[in-house]
Image (cartoon, rainbow, N blue to C red):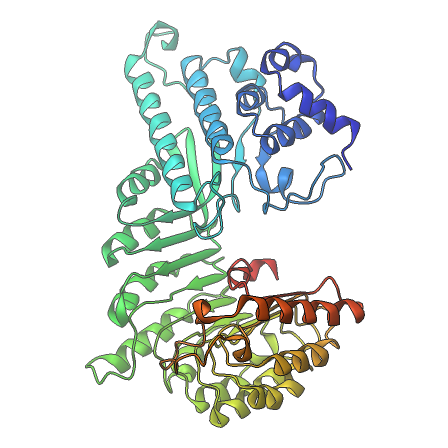
Length: 512
């Protein structure tokens, strides 16, 4: 329910002229609600005056919009994200404030009023697949921040060159202005198109009035040299995740890049999917490359999440993971061509009882892999929160074999089974059996094989049963209604059963 305070704030931010007139009289504790109202209603003209007089050292989007507020009319856990114009308005307002501070370095009115020193924009931008038409992508947010950093840095250099009489010391020596600095904490995404602007912004370094601090670093389609040059410019104390995907690095490239992560002593998450690694090739240097990769992974003391998706690691998992200093809590190995021995190693490893997230999608769960997987689920049953078995050729019979171990995972919250050839009766059995799991709130299930208009063509290995255009929508809707009815009659109406695969991608290790 909307509070009177929020209604008043909404009315005020809707009239920027009135806001400017009264802002000097507004108590500091009301600024956050005014900021929330401006962002949620898209009142971009209200943001510059708010930023110019921000009374706190920190402005964090996550703290201001990232959880339920009693004065707000909806939940804003950064699933309701501010629009792109609002984000841009905040960035431009900070740039304008710093430019004013540079022009009046002795502490003019605007410089004295604004106390902002840290702008936290982490968790703000969406991946392109998830954002709405008004949202700001991670890539465009990165470019906007990089350009803002360069603009302020350029203005700083111009101020230093101009010198002016008011910067002269008592003996006539030039005194450089010491502007207020603002640190911007953000998640950064870079590819070949944005590489140069981000590199130049990061090079501005600690001397720039606007300083980029990266929390999660995502790089795509970069060369080894380009990746290394950016990693070297990041503040290692600030980085918690490095995500290098579609970079086609191969074993040699990974061995060249990973040594530059050794200084990231707080790195919790390392994602290396689609890195063009295939140990099945009889290529010279493969064994040496695997030893190098394992050694470098072992130099990351805080590592808790590892993604090696689409690397063909058949029979080499023990070698890769044995040097890790601590058990991983999230292990993503989709489409990795694992052998029964790889899964058996995981069962006996210290990683099993620590696993909170496990992704073994894209593996053919025949009897050879089904047994080891069942034992792995039993070993991780006390910790497992998220399990992905997408496109694993799970039939009703194979799922029935797995169900006893699955139902022992008492803290399981999310289960991904999309792309498996399961029938409607098989799904109903799964639903009824998993009702014993009190925390299970999301199941992404496949189109049942009996909901196809005709027998779908036999899928290629690893391709799954995802023939959406062949699905009878009426039958599928009826199945969904039946599942919802079973949930409701069992007192579990809050549990979501869906065929929307995007909901799996929206879940993150750090949210577990």
